[in-house]
Length: 344
Image (tube, rainbow, N blue to C red):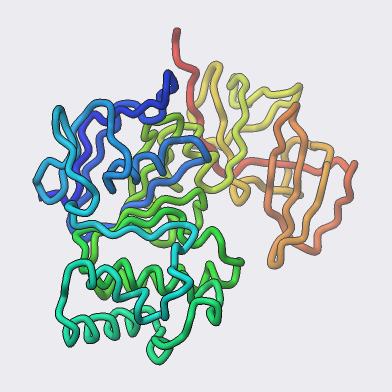
């Protein structure tokens, strides 16, 4: 049985559609990330699952029981869910212990059991010994751990996370990302994670739903999304690929007055979209000479950028290779994806 099931969900604000016929099934114990740019409908979808928004049409079930549908709306507090918000939402006047204990107080859990469960949840998020601290004495990473412990202490059917790491600096994001992965592996809790950060989605999720314009363009494992994107949008959003519109003819792709030699393994002909990941574009190894527009040192490699019309072609190359902006640098393609233009 699916932990969460969405069937034909529609949501609009005024006359603007935000979610358009979304269907999604999330298995018990699975972590699914809703990934996409701002305004794609991912947070609205999470809020509908939580019961904070009502869909205009469709059916939503949790553990096989309908919670939204025609003439039906189960309120948030009766859905058995917990939610971690982007803004922590920690009570400033309560200690760490009292913040985490709050859901159990509402459930009237007896004091001895409440204490044991709070201390257990704090141990899960590595805050043991800090139960007496006030929020003002905690770092941003610790505050987010308090919010996660408070969500988990109620033992929810599903844990919802709305961009919980976006307010943290890069080092703390990476640290908490690893802790979430370890915590999820230990507890086997079903999680739905909203993010616009593809690195978080790929690192944490069993499956990723890439959303664009209120629909899911692809739902797949992180590996499949990266290696076999279903659309040019998915390819560009997951992995930072270059997306070029042009014409494939006689083994070359013609774009912005340049003919790029296509890999011999790629069968492409006619108008379409070519998708190139930076690691699949070779520099200084033969191919068409292109004027270099920028060269950026990124550690173990350098990123080379070339202007093709209004699009920037990105390639990774050796950090010590020569090449200054304005130089003609040979560019060849080792791998590529081609999406033919749809017939109208």
